[in-house]
Image 1 (cartoon, one colour):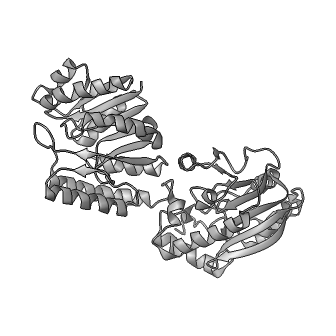
Image 2 (cartoon, rainbow, N blue to C red; image 1 turned 90 degrees about the horizontal axis):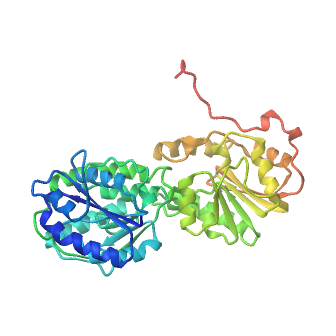
Length: 443
């Protein structure tokens, strides 16, 4: 099925008599196979009967609230795309044609009142409050969407799967966008002209909506600024925190400067870093499915795979990048064997990791962990030093060329592939140390 139309309703019988015929005629003209799902919140004006007369499927939501209505509708939907709109005629059904044409541009299409070309014909007070709300949310949640509160949307089915929505009412609209964005799905807006509802009255309660939205925004802000967000690395490049922005931009300049013109390049475990997006003839391998999705939407050639068994043939690349990867996984010689295997003879290896032998490294990491507790630092399971890592790379068949430090603690080195890997000379002291873990008694 091409499309599922989900309509949450409460006492909208008159509006449904006007809306459903117009919407059905348009979708048939577009040649779509579709279904209409009416999610009823306990109407007493005959709304379910009207919907059934017009061959719509009626579902009674299992708990109160706008969010529950959407969740019920999404669960029942069978289409490859899901359309949501209000049943009060404020969302012009003919506009669905423009949204359907825009579906190839992103995973979520929003009919927006606030992008150029969009208009909202409402009272000055309501329009002003809505503008302030959406601008504040866009800045606080760092999402490039101007109309987060629009319920007139077209979703690709995959963008709605496994979202685990927690909202109770209209704040679910912002939650859907943030959680989908954090999973690497893309959003676009198309200008839309909004008119006041037709018959009936609004079911929104301004004060309750405001309280629910504040609580929801705090939770979403934490998610947006955690490593669970697929674009965490990309956003760090533009961070408002000066130290974070400096480190990411300095790292970017060094690595991209070394890798430019090096030939076919592989970036291992790149996340959403701008490094891979800045290089030509570059490929990415990433274990996280959300980051893989985001990179593919950015036009980056990417495969999902493990650094312990890279899915490429021997000597495929002239340059391999491993920036802030090895400290996140347990030490294994296979990590470095794989880097050498896929790298051509005399190829370049660029590797970066915190140097835990430096004083600044031991000082900065606890501070950064305190400032950004949901950042990457708590995931550092292998603590490398420059001396130990150099010995490992020598045994892996590399010759040292150049070293840089960022902020006195972040180690970035360039090596040349010169020999086959041979770890027989590697001593136990060369291996990275695991973070100190106090015993239960001492804790």
